[in-house]
Image (cartoon, rainbow, N blue to C red):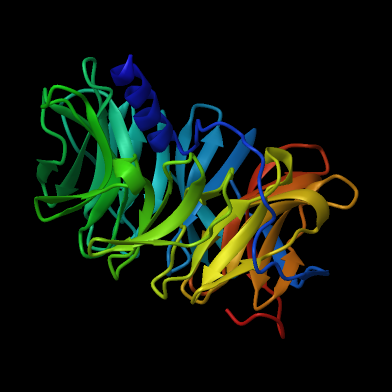
Length: 388
């Protein structure tokens, strides 16, 4: 049924992957070769005593990091201490997703949306049932979702003790993808108020819902929104060719006419406040490469010598992080800046992946060590290289 398909699409929008088919791709336009450079970044393990595995999820501009550790699903915040970092366990049975510049942490605790303040005290954001956090801005406004039986998801904004729902109970389902520092939200919406279900991307601003649709009123999947109100996402035209776009104030701009395409933006931090935008493109799923759109120009970021690469986040300096196959088949984190891709290296294992980068150029993520265990890590620029 159409309702079931939309429910799956909304679920995929929340979980961060596309269920679109995998047609053949044209090569990216305006591709430009880039060279891998030897690592100029120092890697450090973020400590967590007794952890079998650990991972870093996000970093703020102060350099605080949040992530998880096993056993017991521990939510961890790492704070700077002297020349290193110390770990604070926020809760067990929890999963953090974001930390803002106030030190507030958004996540999921015992199946419910939760917010921790900078002292580590927890607030359960709703009492309506299971759900979790999606995004958090620097004003402390939290974008959360609720898992319901009839409609798959309800979305809303928690702000200073009050909860404002974006979806209409009993009439619609919504998945919020991102919230900017102005409190604007973007995501996917399913309305059941008419004779047929209606699905669309949206921007929600102080209670006003603006629809975002592709050609022929097709579904537009929005992914991220910056502080200028620019929205990025992907959609398809009437000939089933997909493309990525930027939308602002009712105007959709096609960024790359690569159809027929398997082409979509990064799912975390896709656009910065300068309007630079990152995405993926390639002739097959195995050969997707990271690209950046910058002032009308599509730039192929390249790889570390392998066939496949992916992209994770971009900061306001235009630094991009992701991971790539190397020439010998390993998968390493990279940082791309001004035409150069730098291999960030590992803790001695064969793989590393970044999850976030702040405007100081500090990168966090995961890496395997020589024993093959996964550990939370931070990369920082070495003296005399990229400033931090």
